[in-house]
Amino acid sequence: MGIQEFASELFAARKKKHIIAVANHTMASAAYWIASQAHEIVASPSAFVGSIGVLAMHEDRSGQNEMLGIKHTIISAGKFKAEGSEDFPLSDAAHEHLQAQVEEIFTEFTKSWKLRSILTLIRIFVNT
Image (spheres, helix red, strand yellow):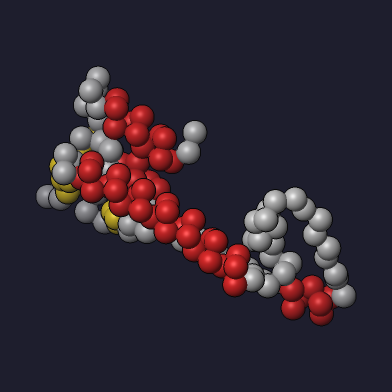
């Protein structure tokens, strides 16, 4: 089960139980996507809640490998199977494909968040 499916199941569970998400420290990205499905979010005064976005990273180690005398050969099937290999520079086509995937996930994240946030009450408890 992926994040999107889990968030949908949690939202559906609201019909059966009152769901409260708790943030004691950091509730960002995937954690926030999940928590936004609850009836309410309770956060400590020092908690960080939010950070709606999607991040992907490619690390190019081809220069390091060259300095070490390491040469890799990839044998694969499927157009994008090896596109994220850290042993080679990221091609423009691979970059475009990965960017499209990130944008698609971001669209689903924000669509889910906007729909659920209408029904979500965010409460911040302040220690007094």
